[in-house]
Length: 255
Ligand SMILES: Nc1ncnc2c1ncn2[C@@H]1O[C@H](COP(=O)(O)OP(=O)(O)OP(=O)(O)O)[C@@H](O)[C@H]1O
Image 1 (cartoon, protein in one colour):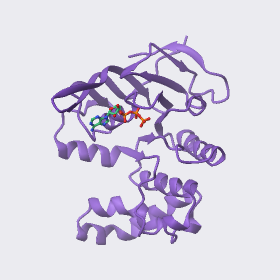
Image 2 (spheres, protein in one colour):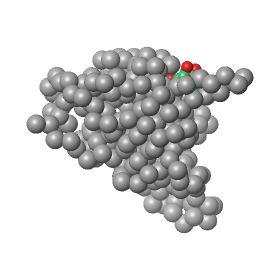
Image 3 (tube, protein in one colour):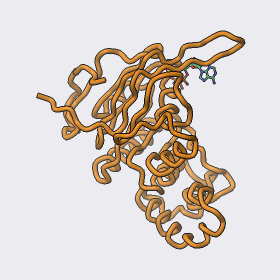
Image 4 (tube, helix red, strand yellow):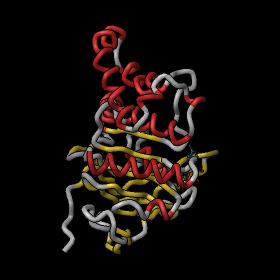
């Protein structure tokens, strides 16, 4: 029997609507989903199905109208903004389809930027040597140490995504949320990014939740949750996290 692994991140009964001109647009209509520690999961669905909205809620960048988000045994959606920021900054790495790098900064400065912003000037000056060493180690981890002085305009899309991944790893997060991480890349470059994410998952024990509209990318994950019109479909194609070569098998979502 497939045993239920420990959940790192869980959404319970999540509902979210946007409002425009007094009209309610229900986007998430009751989402129950759990992401197991140490696994790589995919949230797949068509454009507009609510994937990014759910990811923002899981990252506490936004709050649900109702429902709960739990991380590592604690409820996080109802915490103060300061606590939610602290949780996100220390526990979660986030990467996006368009990398969100600052164009005027070098690769290493981009990797360092969030850590600099989070510290006071004095705090940064105190920690700058160790932060720089960590940034170099993270660029090395993604195979780009030799490009540390290059600006985004001097890099390919795949290299920019690698820099964004290095930046997301600076705080040694438990969880990486990836919103269409290969969406702006050709198939071959996308595959190298997926391979890197899988390495981080297996070698560094990073739990990954990846959003995609592409079934072939979703199928590379251990578990695949399908969103449709703000709901999760009843079945998810899952395979044992220890088996990264076999084909997916169907299992009911443990919600
Ligand atoms: N701030 C907002 N105000 C109003 N509607 C919004 C807002 N943000 C998103 N929406 C709507 O919510 C729906 C879901 O959007 P969301 O970005 O979560 O979908 P998605 O599945 O991630 O789509 P895509 O793959 O195209 O990014 C869409 O119809 C979108 O237009």
